[in-house]
Structure formats: structure tokens, C-alpha cells
Length: 164
Image 1 (spheres, one colour):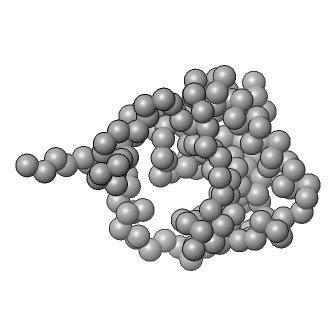
Image 2 (image 1 turned 135 degrees about the vertical axis):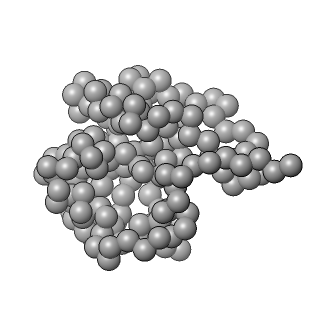
């Protein structure tokens, strides 16, 4: 008997439902008034930090430059250094404030490099815990998100002033 794990919030992503031709990250960048609805954790002159709508683990978020580019090498050094500073702060937040045992950090550059949104670079921060994967990830290509997305967003958002 096959078991079914329902995750209707992932339908658009899995089905590849066409979205507006505009860049989703540029939309978030230019709609500061919608930060709560768009799950923006932080923003400044260089970049913004936003929850990943299709997370690998609870608390997965991204640091994204306002500049629309698919080339890391096109970023000004000041922007890259600022993103790196925010990454350090984010790791501290995830470990100390959120209780993560470890953190994966990475960028998938280009569609061939695995980027889901290849047209606008972004840096992933994925909190990890010992024993946070199990057989379902290994054999069924499925992830189980064990926490409420909105509660996680509010928890991390409340930690931002302490770490940023």
C-alpha cells in the first residue's frame, strides 16, 4: 500500500505552474510595504533576507541582493561583503537563537548549477539538526516539513533585532 503525504502548498512549485514573467526576487525587492505577506525578515540598502517558500528544513531563508543579476562576479565587492556579513549573523541567529546544530550555506549559480530561480542570485541558509533526515528523503525524494511555516517566520523575525 502506497502512503501519500499531502503538501498542497508545494503544488505550484512541483507542477511548474507558470508565473509572471517578472523576477520574483525583484518583486520582493521593490514591494517593501508587503514585507510581512512576502515573509521578508530583513532589508537594507544592499539586500534583503526572505524565508524560502519551498524550504528544505524549517527556518530555511535566503539573502538576496537588490541588484538583478545572474552573475556573482557582477556584484560590487561592497554588496558581496555585506551579504557575507549577513551570512555570518544569520548563522549565529540560526545556531544560538533558533537552536540549529549546523547550517548549510550555498548558492546554485545558473540553471545548470541547480538554481530554481537562475535569473537572480541568492544565498541559501539551511538550518540543520542531527537526525533531521530519514528514509523518506532518501528513497521517496520527499521532504517532511515538521513545523508551521508562519510560526517559524514569526520566530526568526523576532530574533532579527538581536542578531542584525
